[in-house]
Amino acid sequence: MTPKLKYFSRLALLAVCASASARAGEPVMDAIVETSSGATAHLASLWKRPTVLFYEDKDSSRLNQHVKDALFARGRDHGLLEAVSVVAVANVAAFDWFPARNFVLAAVRDVEREAHVAVYLDFKGALATAPWNLPPKSSTVLVLSPEGQVVWKAKGRLSEDELHALFVALEAQLTR
Image (cartoon, rainbow, N blue to C red; front, side, top):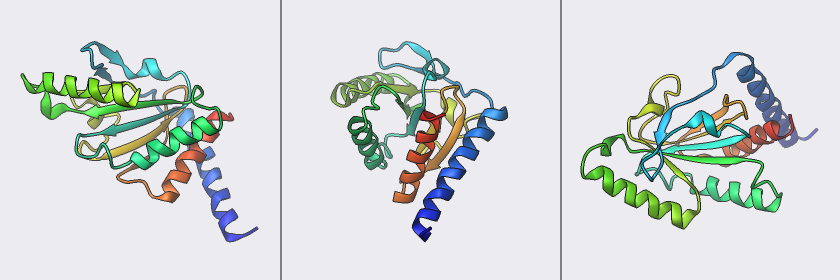
């Protein structure tokens, strides 16, 4: 077995182990967020299939654009666009005041129209607190099982190795 193949085999094994340990006792992740129309939503209501969740503030929303593009391309190329959910949550806790809140809602509606993806708004910073504990001023990418358990997580700009590990973790969820 070549060193590169061994490396990718180890990544696959780690993803499967991470998936199994998360299912064994980790809680279903939930938080109350808002839609761009101002309605509240429980994130747990979205955990029906494997999910990639992006949690970003306004300054880091482009940091992992290469990951978003790769997810869409792979989903399109392999006919998996309906098999995986992609959930975008914007950390907008700093803008939970009038009139900033209204500007944020309008800007997010524009992004949703352009990207054709719903963006949920975390005005209360719920994902920056327990049990999530995600960094509020960065881009964090998670893979969740259909049961809502975190099976993979990375923060900051994802490297090529991390992007590959994300796909391995996602594939493990699709094939279980």
